[in-house]
Amino acid sequence: MHEMSLCEAVVEIAVEEAKKNGVARIKAVVLEVGVLGHVDPDALAFCFSAVSHGTLAENARLIVERIPGSGWCLDCAKPVPMTERFGACPECGRRHVQMSQGDELRLRELEVE
Image (tube, rainbow, N blue to C red; front, side):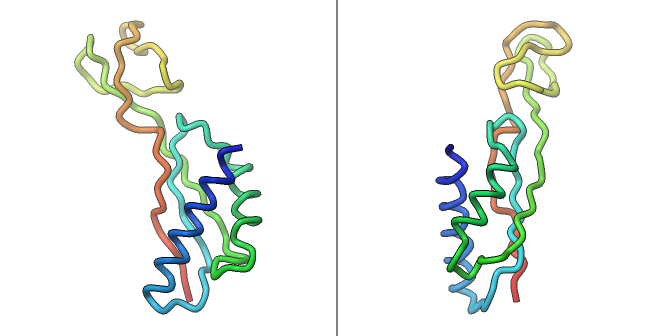
């Protein structure tokens, strides 16, 4: 379950930033998670709860915003939506698509007090 190591990194970054800014408590963590990144939001929430225990992020809400997949079809020379990592272009059916969005995991925002 790679979600555990992802959450460990997210909590570490969040707590480090909170301490740098004199924050008493992290109330919420907003993550942008690409739909093509093979990250399970439910597993992420479970792991976040476990990893944040005993930190400034304990009892914080984890808000996961899903980022759709998109890419550039080299044959059509235009942007196309992607629903799978190595899928075919929905326009021409060829598999010459470079992913441009959808596999990221980004800590976008912290809600603090």
